[in-house]
Each structure stands twice: as structure tokens, then as C-alpha cells.
Image (tube, rainbow, N blue to C red):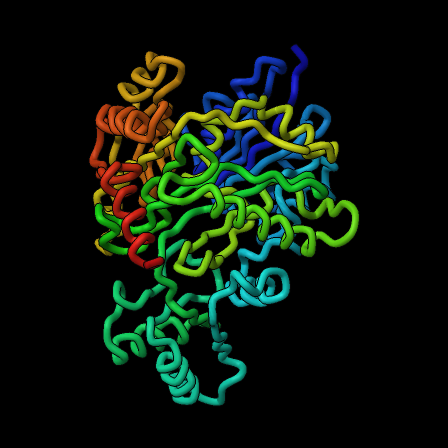
Length: 461
């Protein structure tokens, strides 16, 4: 088999799943060169060379990549920070290694306001009503608060208040969940406004999904639709987090949606992509070019936000059910010949084990707490046809031991012929973890899927 060197720039999010999928190739012998913020135990073991760069400084990443450029065919990343700060631009300029992510020009994740302006141009039908509050446009806060109150009165369904810069769920407030009265909404707005530009959007009622797509700069290749669980607690209660898990069903569409709704999403997203890239091929749009949070409503869907890379848990759902050789997929993106990707008709449910304090508002202990993933890894190795897979996230290897971090610790994917089977496999893996973890029980549950279907049915009556 031919050797292939692969650069991975990692914040310890979905990189373990990316490496696992690439390592399952039957055609190549991959060698991984990993630059990441800490020593992820899975990535460390898989790497031919591994370097810890705590802040993922772009120049340092480029120097690391440059030492291996003669052996590396392409690079990937799991972090928006690398993408939005122009990581691809810097690494390609310094080393010539093609990176499979968008260039800084197309990294719209850096600004919620810029996203709204982009959707207004590319797909106005899917853009909710919104208003941008820029401190430079107001002489004092009182005038901004007055305009906010006026906008609040124009949208009786409530609002979502978002800091302009990415906040990974933190800092985002939604009517009915994070504030109920106008006074509470104004107080929330003041707090976010004091820190910078704010985007206030009409609150859209419906059911969420996550849409992701690959491109080689010319072709547009959607992945199966996934469902993300953003709140900390079962029943979609608690604080917004970076995500507690996700699932995909057996088909490309989620089980609570109709096939026609999936077709409508793909049609609009692809048309918007054609306008975005312009004529011919646009190499700046290469890799997982978008990860859109959608809300399915009474009258179609709206785009809540666009991320400039794959979803942290949602990406795992399609990686674990990809039929095509992922190394081949990456080569096709580099060559400009990516016309499609085959995915299986298996369901995938990803449950995240998190520290007890995660998403609760309570401060992390600050102590070095060891955890043991060995039983869960052994279970995954024994599982039939890889039905359980364990992907370390925010844990780090130090002195031969694995220590818990403050964010999502481990993602456990279950793969099955139904979402029930996949969920059961995922929870088996979660239960085998040893450490001070908690998780949501309802990710991909039959009751949650039924609730989503009933909610949409009620909205559309």
C-alpha cells in the first residue's frame, strides 16, 4: 500500500474521529502528523510525529508542517479558530501543503453579522428577521437599548441575542429559555452589548437540524442531516453548551422530517453555494465548507448560523457511516474531482461524556482528575463491526495517565440498523467510562424523535 502523510491540526474536538476514519482505509498506509493543543491520548498513539501547541499559534503550526512537507499530501483541522484566523492561508503559503478547509475569506463563522448579510444575498428565503447592534453606530448605550426594545416589540415570538463573535453557545440567549420578560431581555442584551457587536434575531419556533457539505471548490456534496443536542440537560433543559451529542437516522433525512424537506434543503443550499463560489472552480471553498444550524418551521426552514468547518459531534455521525475511503475523498477534494460521497444506511448516535460542572455554570474544580478510558476502548475493540467507537476529546495524556479537562471529555458513537440500536450501543460505551462524568440520556431516543415529529405536526396544522 502507498504511504500517505496527513497533517492534522487539532483542538481535541472531532480529530480523533477523523484520524480513526482515515486509518480505516484499505488502500493506503496513512502517517499522521498531529499539531494539537494538548496530548489527546488517541491522537498521540496514532501520530508518526506529535507536537503540543497549546494556543495553536499559526506560525508554529506552519513550522511543524514545514518539517514534514515532503511526506504530507494534505491537511485537515477540527477547529474553527484555525480556520477563521487564516490557518489554511498561512500553512499553504509556508509549506505548499493543501489544507482541506476554507480560506479566511470564506470563514464566515468569525461574525454572526456577516453571516446574516451573506444569507441576505445568497438565500434570503432562509434568513430570519434580524438587526445588528454595533457600538460604533450609537453615541450611548441608552439609544441602543431603545432600538432593541423597539425591535423586541416588532417580533412577538421573541428573540435570540447573539454576540457577533463565535461564543460556542456561551453568551447566546433565547426568549423563553434564558429570559422571559422585557426587563430580563434588556438586561441580557446590555451584558452582551457591553462586550461588542450584537446580532438580535427573531426567535424561530420549530425543530433543529445540522446540515454539512463537502466541496472541492467546484462540486457540492451534502452529508446526511444530523440532529445536535445543545442544552446541558435531558429534555433540552439547562444552559447552552457546545453540544452534548447528535444523531443521524438510516436515511439522509432525519426521521422526524419528510424526504421532500431534505430535498428542499439540499436544493437551496446548493444554489446558494453556486452563487457564493462564483463562476468555475473556487479553491477557497474546499473541505467541509459549511455546517449550518437549521430550524424547520411551519413555512420551511431558516438558517440559524453558519460554521466554517464540520460539527464537533455531527461530523462524527457521518464519518462513522461513510462507505467511501476517506483518504480517497480527501485526494478527490485536492484534485477537484469530488462528485459524490457514499454513506451507509446505518444510524449513528453520538453521546458525549462531560465533566460534572460542564454547562451548569459551576466553576471547574481546577484539580488534575485522572480518568480511565480503557474499559470503553476495550468494549469498542470487541464490538461487532465497529458498532461502538470511542473518541477522546478534552482529555489529555500526561505522565502515562489521562486527565479530564473542562469541556466535552469523550464522544462515544454507536452505529446500528436503527437509531434505537445505535443509541443503545453508544450508551454501552458511555457506561464503560470510568471517571466523574455525566451525559444526556435522551440523545437519539425514540421519545425525543417522537416529540420532534409531533411538534412539527402541531406547528403545521
